[in-house]
Image (cartoon, rainbow, N blue to C red; front, side, top):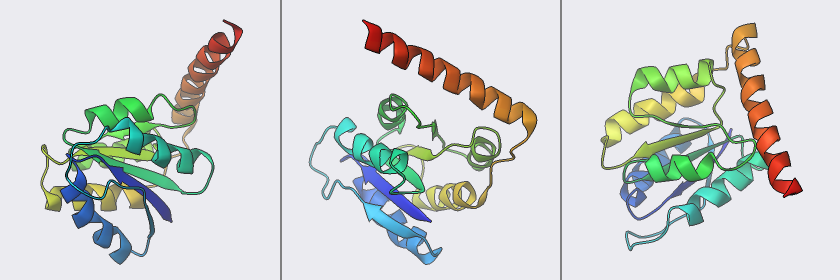
Length: 155
Protein backbone atom coordinates (compact mmCIF):
# COMPACT_ATOMS: atom_id res chain seq x y z
CA UNK A 1 0.00 0.00 0.00
CA UNK A 2 0.95 3.63 -0.44
CA UNK A 3 0.74 5.43 2.89
CA UNK A 4 0.72 9.24 3.07
CA UNK A 5 2.06 10.47 6.40
CA UNK A 6 2.16 13.89 7.96
CA UNK A 7 2.99 15.33 11.34
CA UNK A 8 3.27 18.68 13.01
CA UNK A 9 6.12 19.58 15.36
CA UNK A 10 4.46 17.65 18.19
CA UNK A 11 4.48 14.45 16.16
CA UNK A 12 7.70 14.89 14.19
CA UNK A 13 9.87 12.60 16.35
CA UNK A 14 7.34 9.76 16.27
CA UNK A 15 6.90 10.15 12.51
CA UNK A 16 10.64 9.74 12.06
CA UNK A 17 10.48 6.47 14.02
CA UNK A 18 7.42 4.96 12.33
CA UNK A 19 8.32 5.77 8.71
CA UNK A 20 11.09 3.15 8.47
CA UNK A 21 8.91 0.71 10.40
CA UNK A 22 6.07 1.09 7.88
CA UNK A 23 8.57 0.62 5.06
CA UNK A 24 9.85 -2.55 6.74
CA UNK A 25 6.29 -3.90 6.53
CA UNK A 26 6.51 -3.51 2.74
CA UNK A 27 4.55 -0.29 2.30
CA UNK A 28 5.53 2.77 0.29
CA UNK A 29 5.65 6.08 2.17
CA UNK A 30 4.66 9.50 0.89
CA UNK A 31 6.16 11.76 3.57
CA UNK A 32 4.36 15.10 3.54
CA UNK A 33 6.24 16.63 6.48
CA UNK A 34 6.92 18.35 8.69
CA UNK A 35 10.69 18.01 8.67
CA UNK A 36 11.64 19.46 12.07
CA UNK A 37 10.35 20.07 15.58
CA UNK A 38 9.87 23.84 15.11
CA UNK A 39 6.28 24.93 15.77
CA UNK A 40 3.96 24.56 12.76
CA UNK A 41 0.19 24.37 12.27
CA UNK A 42 -1.33 20.87 12.14
CA UNK A 43 -3.96 21.65 9.45
CA UNK A 44 -1.11 22.45 7.06
CA UNK A 45 -0.01 18.80 7.30
CA UNK A 46 -3.38 17.09 7.73
CA UNK A 47 -4.81 18.53 4.52
CA UNK A 48 -2.13 17.26 2.09
CA UNK A 49 -2.37 13.76 3.58
CA UNK A 50 -6.15 13.77 3.25
CA UNK A 51 -5.90 15.18 -0.26
CA UNK A 52 -3.65 12.29 -1.31
CA UNK A 53 -6.09 9.76 0.15
CA UNK A 54 -9.21 11.32 -1.40
CA UNK A 55 -7.55 11.60 -4.82
CA UNK A 56 -6.37 7.98 -4.67
CA UNK A 57 -2.69 8.95 -4.68
CA UNK A 58 -2.36 7.12 -1.36
CA UNK A 59 -4.30 4.11 -0.12
CA UNK A 60 -4.35 5.38 3.46
CA UNK A 61 -3.02 8.22 5.58
CA UNK A 62 -1.39 8.55 8.98
CA UNK A 63 -1.35 11.80 10.95
CA UNK A 64 0.64 12.49 14.11
CA UNK A 65 0.58 15.50 16.40
CA UNK A 66 1.03 15.92 20.14
CA UNK A 67 -2.29 14.33 21.06
CA UNK A 68 -3.75 13.37 17.68
CA UNK A 69 -6.83 15.44 18.46
CA UNK A 70 -6.10 18.42 16.23
CA UNK A 71 -5.10 16.24 13.30
CA UNK A 72 -8.24 14.09 13.60
CA UNK A 73 -10.51 17.14 13.78
CA UNK A 74 -8.89 18.69 10.69
CA UNK A 75 -8.92 15.42 8.74
CA UNK A 76 -12.59 14.74 9.39
CA UNK A 77 -13.52 18.04 7.75
CA UNK A 78 -12.53 16.55 4.39
CA UNK A 79 -15.29 14.80 2.45
CA UNK A 80 -14.40 11.15 1.97
CA UNK A 81 -12.07 10.94 4.96
CA UNK A 82 -12.86 8.68 7.88
CA UNK A 83 -10.14 9.45 10.40
CA UNK A 84 -9.91 7.75 13.78
CA UNK A 85 -7.84 8.90 16.73
CA UNK A 86 -6.32 5.70 18.12
CA UNK A 87 -4.13 5.08 21.15
CA UNK A 88 -4.77 1.38 21.80
CA UNK A 89 -4.62 -1.89 19.87
CA UNK A 90 -8.30 -2.81 20.16
CA UNK A 91 -9.40 0.51 18.67
CA UNK A 92 -6.88 0.13 15.82
CA UNK A 93 -8.54 -3.13 14.82
CA UNK A 94 -12.13 -2.06 15.46
CA UNK A 95 -11.85 1.19 13.51
CA UNK A 96 -10.80 -0.74 10.41
CA UNK A 97 -13.25 -3.63 10.81
CA UNK A 98 -16.28 -1.49 11.69
CA UNK A 99 -15.59 1.99 10.30
CA UNK A 100 -13.37 1.32 7.27
CA UNK A 101 -11.15 4.22 8.33
CA UNK A 102 -8.75 5.51 5.73
CA UNK A 103 -6.76 7.86 7.98
CA UNK A 104 -5.23 7.10 11.36
CA UNK A 105 -4.38 9.84 13.88
CA UNK A 106 -2.10 9.34 16.87
CA UNK A 107 -0.51 11.48 19.56
CA UNK A 108 3.23 11.37 20.20
CA UNK A 109 2.75 12.76 23.71
CA UNK A 110 0.16 10.08 24.50
CA UNK A 111 1.78 6.83 23.31
CA UNK A 112 5.28 5.51 22.92
CA UNK A 113 6.95 4.30 19.73
CA UNK A 114 6.37 0.59 20.41
CA UNK A 115 2.64 1.01 20.89
CA UNK A 116 2.47 3.32 17.86
CA UNK A 117 4.15 0.70 15.69
CA UNK A 118 1.75 -2.03 16.85
CA UNK A 119 -1.24 0.26 16.27
CA UNK A 120 -0.01 0.97 12.75
CA UNK A 121 0.66 -2.70 11.98
CA UNK A 122 -2.80 -3.76 13.17
CA UNK A 123 -4.50 -0.85 11.40
CA UNK A 124 -2.75 -1.59 8.11
CA UNK A 125 -3.36 -5.36 8.28
CA UNK A 126 -7.01 -5.31 9.37
CA UNK A 127 -9.57 -5.40 6.55
CA UNK A 128 -13.00 -3.80 6.65
CA UNK A 129 -15.58 -6.43 7.63
CA UNK A 130 -17.94 -5.40 4.83
CA UNK A 131 -20.81 -6.66 6.98
CA UNK A 132 -24.25 -5.32 6.10
CA UNK A 133 -24.67 -3.50 9.41
CA UNK A 134 -21.35 -1.66 9.11
CA UNK A 135 -21.90 -0.78 5.45
CA UNK A 136 -25.33 0.58 6.39
CA UNK A 137 -23.86 2.75 9.12
CA UNK A 138 -21.17 4.10 6.81
CA UNK A 139 -23.84 4.92 4.24
CA UNK A 140 -25.61 6.98 6.92
CA UNK A 141 -22.36 8.82 7.66
CA UNK A 142 -21.91 9.48 3.93
CA UNK A 143 -25.48 10.82 3.74
CA UNK A 144 -24.69 13.27 6.56
CA UNK A 145 -21.52 14.33 4.76
CA UNK A 146 -23.44 14.82 1.51
CA UNK A 147 -26.24 16.76 3.21
CA UNK A 148 -23.88 19.29 4.74
CA UNK A 149 -21.72 19.55 1.62
CA UNK A 150 -24.85 20.34 -0.37
CA UNK A 151 -26.13 22.81 2.27
CA UNK A 152 -22.91 24.83 2.17
CA UNK A 153 -23.08 25.10 -1.63
CA UNK A 154 -26.60 26.52 -1.58
CA UNK A 155 -25.87 29.28 0.92
